[in-house]
Amino acid sequence: MENKAEKVKPYNSGKGKKKEVEIMFDNISGKYDFLNHLLSLGIDRKWRKNLISMLAATKPASILDMATGTGDLAIMTSKFIPSAKITGLDLSRGMLDIGRKKIIERNLQVKIEMIQGDSENMPFETSTFDAVTVAFGVRNYENLLKGLSEANRVMKNGGNIYILEFSKPKNTFFRFFFNLYFKFILPIVGRLTSRDPKAYRYLFESVQAFPAYEDFLAIMDKAGFKSNNYKIQSFGICSIYHGVKL
Image (cartoon, rainbow, N blue to C red; front, side, top):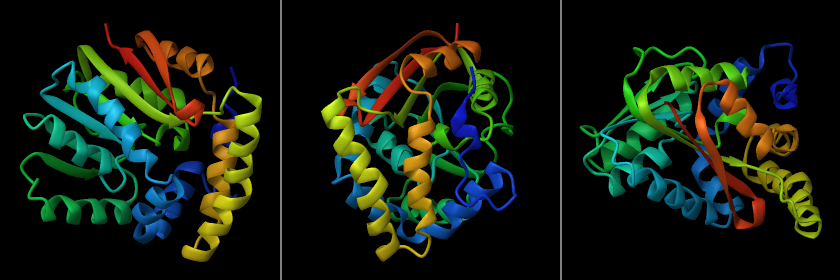
């Protein structure tokens, strides 16, 4: 099955998607947290809490947060699972620099480590982590199957993966307003508040191309995960996908 999202790039500069995504997040890192919460009306925090509540039930001791960005999910996870050791991995140094400042401000250096690296070629030994999380990151992978296969490799047998990602609402009426917001309103706000409006045009295009719901579960299965399922959030604006390494 072709993954059209892999062909969608922020700038179409001739560079690979991976490099363009790294540049994009470096460019918007200073405004990322502000715009992320503003443009989602704060609902993104609820989505993350829903993921963490599912994760907490499995009581993982070690967690890898892939595409961690500025560390929002990692920081929130440390609050709800205080005994866990969390490693955040991201391509963008700009995003990681902000994440590290947030971790220091909250005195979480012992609980959370931030590493710059490639989610499709990770610097970790096989079977290292009890669980893997990703929030709004897999859509940006250059090779989605490779990234998910790497997540499977670094997880221990019996480990769980939880992925929060945008999806297209199934309801036709709600999908119309969802597309209107993402295609027109969001880029305008991004243009007014960010020096990189192309990043917000890319958001709409990548969401439209992303293989959501059963199509994404099929890719998870190819990557080696079993018992795959998803839970729709906020009428299908996004979904939480879950799989197990057996």
